[in-house]
Image: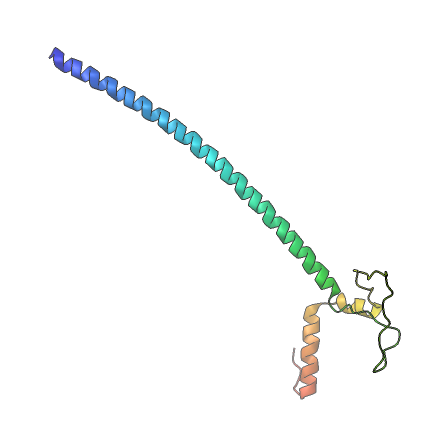
Length: 134
């Protein structure tokens, strides 16, 4: 019986040693996973900031394009057929800003697009002789 108690004590010591080793390994794994999670979180934040920067650049370009749409320079007199436009003098810089719009354009730009669509429909109905019902 004393031999059996000795075997049980040896087995208990081995189990305690294995449990301690496994706890150490689990703690090391936990630390490694936390570090990887922090690195992944930092990478996601970097990607998010880069994506936002690209979105801002694209939005700025689109806003610039939208401000230039339909903003052609208006000359005081139309050029006659066969007339060549005046050349730009050497060293003269072209403006990157669109020219200011005449006052008549401001009222159009400030309007409601839904009303403009409705006006187009009314004009088409009148042109084609349909009755206008709204």
